[in-house]
Length: 394
Image 1 (tube, rainbow, N blue to C red):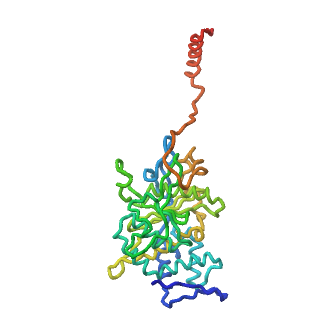
Image 2 (image 1 turned 30 degrees about the horizontal axis):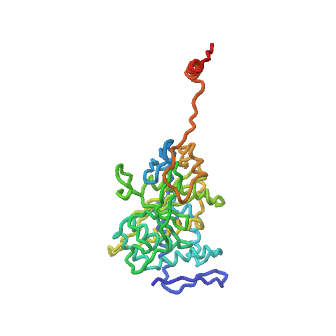
Image 3 (image 1 turned 90 degrees about the vertical axis):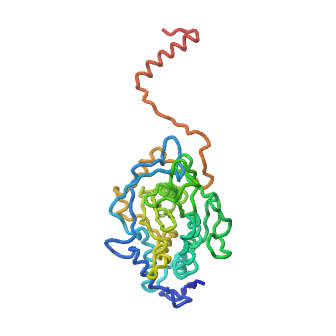
């Protein structure tokens, strides 16, 4: 059973008191440094790449596309940024703890730090994820939600798409007897039928979305599509952009509007971010869920744990875009691609009860009234109508 960590707030130094002397402080430190987020390494291991949108179908004039049918061609923008550059709050929280077990003053932040420290010694959850390659892609998403993401989150609630293939009710797909889901199945649809829309795989605490992308293969049903690559994935990009606009619409009081999405395959995690206020799109380098140890066994990758902790708790740990990310040459360009549909993204997105359009879209097209054919034909048509009514116009 995993050892639980408690805090002693009695002393002015705000030091942590543990129920076990074996807590791996050194492991936490090595994990943080290995990510390249706590150092000035010239070639950090894990990065964030700004993306420019070259073309997309997020504002098609004839129809709105579902997320699996989204098209989005992107190009990377250099220079890249270290993963931790948008998580200044979370990085310093870990650093201050490592430097002398100094805890945050805020009780909510203490609770979040405790979630990370607890998970690092939760060998039962590690063991479940270390068997993840035995499960289907859909089951891996649920495993991660139940045995990683919500265990790191401030509150353990999540909703799984009720259309999920292989739905298991309240049971977790893991091999632990009587293990139940801490979340539930429900309506995870988001967007607007006029633009990008559809059901998200998992929504955690109504704040973070988890996506298992599918290949867009013509002629195949949604159930027949295979898992797709996470890199530059148009489905994940579309869902990230829509969810960011939706969260901005719902939480206009937030300090920043950089919202994340977690892309999942059986082996890797990729984190996407979109700032719907500044039009900046970021994609992380892939982070493997498991790494091979010296004995050839695959173990939980604590880099993925730390990255997940930062992203899941972005409301408390994310500091938003850096100054260099706000420069004009780092813009994604989605605002211009959205064109007249931008107002829908800004003001008319929905969470829940989003489906197919109920009626054909009506357009108010503007025609150049100076075209000569309009004046000439109108005069003849007026004469024809007058003859039919018995009146002659000279």
